[in-house]
Amino acid sequence: MVDIYTCEGEVPGGAALEYSVLTTFPFSSETKRMGIILREASSQKIFFLVKGAEAVMIPRLQPKGSHWLQEECDNFARQGLRTIVLAQKELSEAEYDLFATRYAAARAAMTDRHSKCRREIERLEEDLRLLGLTGVEDKLQNDVPATLEALRHAGVKVWMLTGDKVETATCIAVSAGLKARQHSLTILSSQSIRTPSQTQEALERFAMGPSESVLVVDGRVLGAALQHFPHYFVRVAAQAPAVVCCRCSPTQKADVVRFVKKFTGRRACAVGDGGNDVSMIQAADVGIGIVGKEGRQASLAADFSITQFSHLRRLLLWHGRNAYQRSAKLAQFVIHRGLIIAFIQVIFSAIFYFIPLAIFQGWLQVG
Image (cartoon, rainbow, N blue to C red; front, top):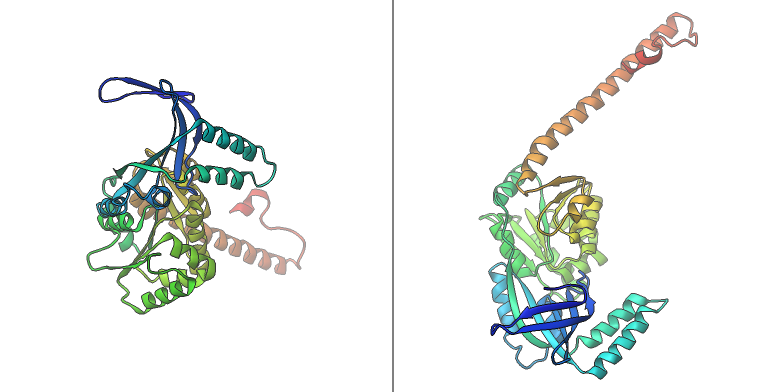
């Protein structure tokens, strides 16, 4: 049982444990981790528990006992699993009192409050002890490969913007059918590309390479490209049959959508199902939210709401096409009606010596 003040549980032997909640640090896409400070009721010990992505957790762990972590994270990622690292740190009363005092002062600051609070939390997150690693499988919905295949045949370019690491995102792209059998993979990873000049050179090599290659871009490489040469990046990436952007923050997702709209001159449709996709959905010409396990934030912020990704095929290729044809017919009707009314009015005025009299009165002008 858990509430905002206490949490209870049982150990395998059947003994009950009770903890009181002292402080919580919610998850954010910026930090990619969350934490909580608990006090055990029986022993009065204070524990600081943290969980988050391995990229931000590994530098904060004790070297002892965590040498195997990176290899296992890579193994999980190659299986398409999302990895979460769990760690803890036992605090003394003096350490907690010092942190509580500094954290309260940071929260009461009138200027630069967020960075001061973040600084105090990061001090507490040093020298954590590894507890374990979990791999979470996010199964694809039904008919996702068929839907992407239909969109590809309809001439729609698909870009996948995700917060997952490169290995996980690549596995998902293959299983979802974003990468066809005849396509190869070109991966621009921050492990081999560290400067903007190296990023530009890698994009030049990709532009001169085979056209049937899916471009996979790491978050750091993507950030450097969007900051220094967004026009060149979008122009080169648009040549690929599909693009996979990994380790994207919500801000980067929205920036990618804006730059694609700006530099390609095409209409952008953003599809998402989580709170991290809201900014991307709002930046697109058409936003589509999927109601799912991650809540209704994306659905409420979108122009259209669907319950399954497979519904996207009918929404775009059938209803979207019909809506386009109806709009085109209405525009043609309005243009031709205006021309006919204006032409008849000119003839009428010329015959009757250009008197200031309209031949079509009131509602007749509507046509």
